[in-house]
Image (tube, rainbow, N blue to C red; front, side, top):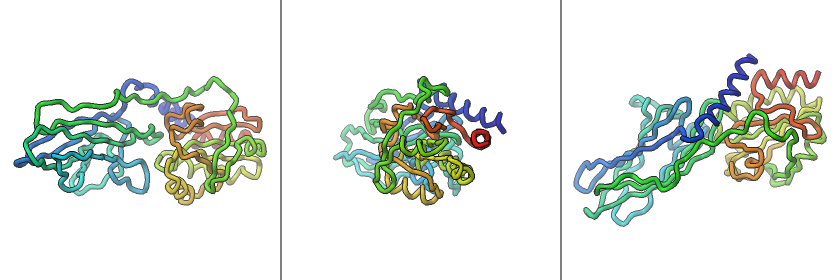
Length: 306
C-alpha cells in the first residue's frame, strides 16, 4: 500500500509538470449548413488520458461543469439548447464526465446571408482521479458562412506546473483567513495549540479532494485529542457551494477560504497549481511532510503520535 501511495503521488507530479507546454484539452469547431440560413455549430473537445472534463450539468456537484456562452450577434438567433455527447457515450447513457472527449452542438439561424462570425466563451475544468487543474476560460471566434478559420483569442494554454515534492522553504508561512462565519482565523494561533497540523488545500467541485477529505475524517477523530489539528483551505469562489460541501461531507475541523480560488495570494505563495495538495507541519510551523494520502497519511500520523 505504501508503494501504491508513493506511485500515485509521483504520478500526480508528473501529470502536472510533465506536459507544461500543452493543456490536456484541445478544441476544434465547425459550422454545417442544414437548411437555408440554418447551421449546426459543433464544438469538439479532445481530452488526453488520464484527464477528463465535465458535462454542462455535473452530477452530485463534482467538478465544475462545462459552460459555453455565445455572444449576442445582430445576425444570429440561437435555436434551442446546447446539446452534448461524449465520444465514448452510448445513446441513452448518462456520464458523470467525458474521458475521451465530447461534442457540444448548437443550432443557429442567420437573419441574412451577410458574412457572420460567431464569438463564444468556453469555461471548463480538466481533472484526473487524483487531482484537478485550475478552471480554464477561453474565447474563440468561428466563421459561419464565409471562408475563414476559427480563431483562438487567447494565448495557447499551458498545464500549470506543480510545486516540487521538496520546496525550497521548510517553514510554513502563517496566514489569516475567514472561516465559514466570516470570522478571521490566525493559522499561527491554531497551529501553536496543536502538536501537528494538517493543512489541506481543496475545493467543493474537486472530486478527488472530497474523497480524500472523507478519508481524513477517521484519522482526525482518532488523533485530535492527542494534538492533531486540521485546517481546510478551500479554493472555492462560491461561498454557498463551499459551505454545502463541508456540511455534506462532515468536516468538523477548521475550514477557511478567501473565496479567490487559484488567485488566492496563499495559493500563489505555496504554488498550488492543482488540487488536492496538503502540508503536515509541527507546532513551530516546520513542514514535516507534503501530499500525504491514504495509508501513507495514516502511517505517518501513527508514527508521530507513538
